[in-house]
Length: 399
Picture 1: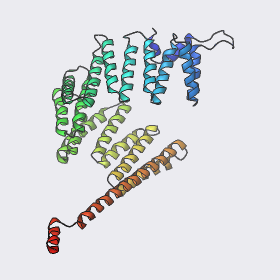
Picture 2 (picture 1 turned 120 degrees about the vertical axis):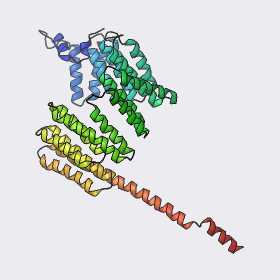
Picture 3 (picture 1 turned 90 degrees about the vertical axis):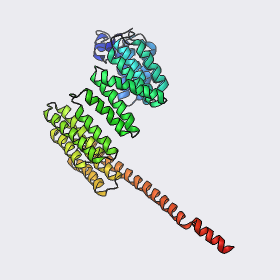
Picture 4 (picture 1 turned 30 degrees about the vertical axis):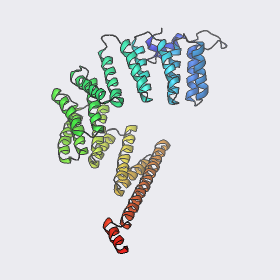
């Protein structure tokens, strides 16, 4: 069993432990040296050679602490290759090298679960949750609630009506009773999203309302009102939706003004811009994105936000068949190109963005034209077919 420090990426400590002081140039490489050589090959694009090196390392030094890192890198490689079986095997091998029930063992069990979940293997993912539940210490309430959240998510996705109902009840209890704010929030959003996806917007809003009634002073309530407003817009109740939305937006504006940490300000501004975008208030969304750009001049974030602005208008132009909006998006991408002429990476991204949105619009227009042609053909057929009354008249005349 090995120390958890290796899973936290403390390669520097490993390097010191195996530094070849006083050895001659013909000395055999240490396991740490072999690991670093393998990772250098991967970074240089020689992935196959790097993977072979890692496989040799775990085969020849399976009891060395560096094998933990090697197994994890191999698992990540197999995930990228969508070979989930091999990925799980390597994560499990890494887990075998750390103390049972240690924080690192628990963390690896969570990684195995997430890998199975992303691979759409719910039954195996549920089994992994059972293993994790037996492994965690008695007092680890955060992980215990995390397991409950993930189990409920799977049950909602694949369960029958009774199972789903029980899972939703469990999430509601967790939302109202958990002492961990992040878990309360995840339980809230899991319920609200379930009803939203079923277009049961009133039920989605009832979840949000219960949360605000129980936690009236929570700073997240401004964003909850935004989400409730969006739900009402989706339910084709724009006036009621705007009333709630504007309440949330105004409260969030105050929170943004009082926030001193720039990174947090950026996050809140981006969230507000996205909400405005969903309800098609593009001018308001643009104002928030421009504020991020103004407050983060000379930083890559400003350029990334500018790309988001172009994407917003171009996408809206396609979805609404609006030339003005679409061209506004293209103009933003062109502006990015002109403002970053010396930066090949940024100008290349802008050119690619223009190509992508233009292609998407062409395909959208082609599909729309095909649908319209099919509808016109169907109408033409209906108009050429005689009505029942006309058919009867023809039949009588023939008799």
